[in-house]
Amino acid sequence: MSGPGMTPEAARAADRVEASAAARIAPSAEFLDRVARVRVELVRTVEEAARARGSPLVRALVAGSAARGTFLSDRLDIDLFLLFPPDLPRERLREEGLALGHAVLTEPRVRYAEHPYLRGRYELFEVDAVPGYAVDDPSRPLSPVDRTPFHQAYLAERETPELVTEVRLTKQFLRRLGIYGSEAKTEGLSGYLVELLVLRFGSLRTLLLAARHWRIPVRLAEAGREPPRLPEEVALILADPVDPNRNVASALSRRNLATLVLAAGAYLDAPSEAWFEPRPVRPFSRADAEALVRERDSHVTVVALPRPDLVDDTLFPQVRKAERAIAQELGRSGFELLGSSAATDPAHVYLLFEVAHRNRAAVRRQDGPPAGIDRVGQFLDKWSAKDAPVLQGPYVREDGSLGVETRVAERHVEGVLRAVFPRLSLGKDLTPADPTATDIRSLRETPEVPAIADALRVLLGKRLPWLDRA
Image (cartoon, rainbow, N blue to C red; front, side, top):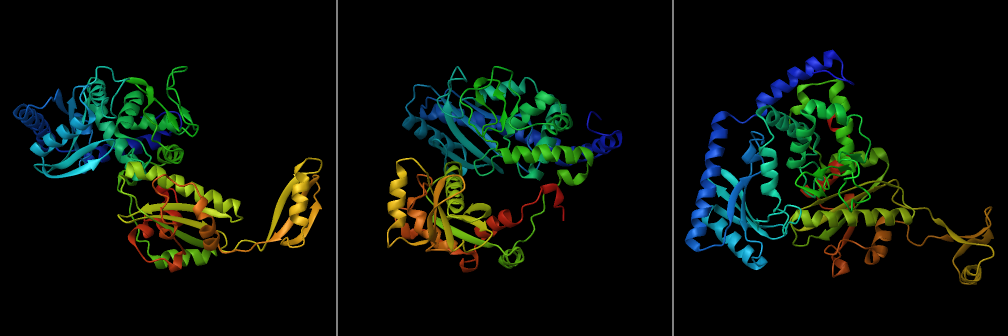
C-alpha cells in the first residue's frame, strides 16, 4: 500500500514488515478462546456473588482490549466493570465494588483512582474490578468509567478482524516509541484513542501517512464541533463519539505527539522490523552520567522530596508542576537551564536539573523603571543609599530606563534553590510541611538509587527512539 509521501519500494518493504510484525504480536487462537471463556466466567461469577449478597449491581461486563481482542500477545489486563444504580451513594458504591471484587478475585489489592477499585487474579490473568454507575447518557457520567459500556458498544459494532490487526500493529509501533498509554506518567495515546484513530484512517499505514504532515495542535474534530474548554497546550483534538463534549486525546502531550509525527515520516521512508521490536534499555550507571556531565562541562542538581501517599495519576501532574516551577526559578535566578527530568520511588520524588554552570555570574544587573514615572524615586532611594550593595550605578541605560549592578551573594545553584524553595508553588501535596525535609544536592553528592538512574537516563540520554537501536 503506497501513497503520497511513500515510494513503491518503501511500501513493499512496509508490507513485509507489517505482515511479519502482525503475526508475531497476535495472540494465538487458543489464547483468544481462553480469554473469551474467562470473560464469560467473570461476569457470571460476579453476578452470582451479587445475587447472593443482595447487591444492587445493575450489570457487569468485561470491556476494553480484552473484550475486543485488540490486546497484544504479551500485554493483557482484563477490566471488569461493576455498574450500579446512579442514585447509589459513593460510599456504598465503594463498599459494594470492593466486596464483589473480593468475591471473584484471588490475591486482591486495593488500588485508587477517583474511587477505590480492586486488582487481583482470576486464573492466570490480572484483573481490575472497577465500580461505576449504569448511566443512560454517556455525556453525563457520574464517574470516569461510566462511558466505558458505550465505548465498548461503539467499537464492537465497527471493528473488523482486519481493523483489530491494525490496532495491534499501531499499539506496538507506539510502544516502541514509548508513547503508548494515557497514564499521567506517560502522557501518551490511550488504547481507546488508538482504536478510534485506526477506525478513522483504516490502518496504521494510512494513519502514519496523514500524521507525517500534522501540525500541532492537530484538529480531527469536525469544524465547529470541537469539545469545549480545551486547554491552551492541547496537542490533539478528537471528540469522543459517545460524548462530543470530551476530547479523547486530552492526556496526550505535545512532546509525544511530535514524536509520533516525526516517527511517521522516518518509518514511511525506511520501514524495518526494528520499529515493532521492544526498545532496548541500555544500562545507565552513575559513572556514565558523571562522565557525560564532565564531558559537557555542565552541572546536575537533584531535589529530593518526600513522596505523598498518592497514586501515579494524581501524583505526576503535581510532579510536573513542581518541575516547571523550579525550572522557571532557575531561569529567573540567572542559570542557563539545559534540561530537567523527574522520577519517583515509594519514598521519594526526585527532580533533576542540568544547568550550563553550577555558579551564576557574580554581578547581577537590576532593571529599574523608565525616567518620568513615580517609581523612579523609590528606585533611586533604595540603590543610592550608602549601605546599598551597589557595584555600579544607578545609571540611565540607552532605552531611558534606570539600572544598577549588584554583587550576587549566593552563586551556587544548590544554595540558590535552598534559599528560594520555601516560596515556590509546587503541587498541593508536594510542598513539605517541614522545609528541612527537602534535600537539594549536586549529583555527585546524591546517593545512588534506581529512580535517580532512571531520571538521569531521561535527562542525559535524550535521543529520538528510532535512532537508538543498539
